[in-house]
Each structure stands twice: as C-alpha cells, then as structure tokens.
Image (cartoon, rainbow, N blue to C red; front, side):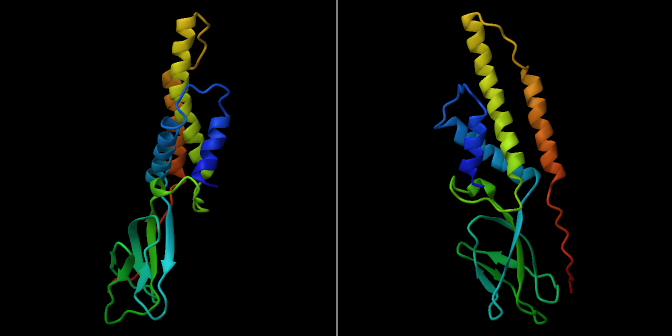
Length: 182
C-alpha cells in the first residue's frame, strides 16, 4: 500500500470534508507516517556483497541500527550520502548484515510502504486526525447556521487518536540483535 492509497481511503470515510485537500491532508498523512515511525519503528536489513564491505545506501535510511558480520560479530559502519561502509576488523568475516531504521516520512506518495508496516494503524491515525479537524469545523458551521450540534467532543476525538498511538507502540518492532563484541 502506498501513502496515497492510505490518504484516498481515509478521505473516502468523510462524506463532507471541510479541509483543504491540497495542503492540510498531505501534512496529516506525513504526521501520521511520522507518528508510526516514532511509536512502532520499521527496521529493514541489507547485506553487503561477499567481496565488499560497502553497499549502496537504501533510499529511506533514517539511521543504522546494527551491523554484524557472517559470524555474528558487531561492527561499526559509516552512513555516507551514497553508501554504507562497514569498518572492518582483523577478525571480520564477510558478508555483513546491516539493519537500519526506515524513514517513513521520506516516502513519496506513490512509493510502496515496507511490508512490515501496519497500514491499517496509519490509516486509523489519518482518519482520527482528519476527524479532529473536520469535526471542529463542522461544529462551527452547525453553530453559525443554527443546526443541531451532536458531534463528539474534541477530547473524545483526541482520546481515540491517543488509543491508536498506544496500539502503534504495542506493535513496536522488537529489535534484539544477537551479536558478539570482541
């Protein structure tokens, strides 16, 4: 699923949308991707070739989480603009496995999110965030036109979003590398 798919599904949940689709909605999507990134985290891995200690930098690297060689020894690495270079030691054994945190905020609207990402939680967060702003404006419209105001309170909507964020934390990536430091 792409970020655009998530936003399209979220927008379809609102028969009347009081928000600017060109500016506000993309910002809400980026914020929701960032909240998921911060609360749950996404870790991916890449291996170096057998004959090298360097690999091309993946597109959305946030930071390096761990580097280990073929025998499970911990290594340090340098995250460059174009590549990741493992600092080799005398006892190093290639290939190296580099685990890194993924920067979800850097994804384009059309780029597929990693399979490990819970698109449903991000979607729920986008819907809850849109609902907070949309309900606030709908409430103002109802008051100004004398209509009934039976919308949920701002606190109820914020509590709903907070519950989604708690769910994100509960699905957090448990990253416990088993490495040897010598």
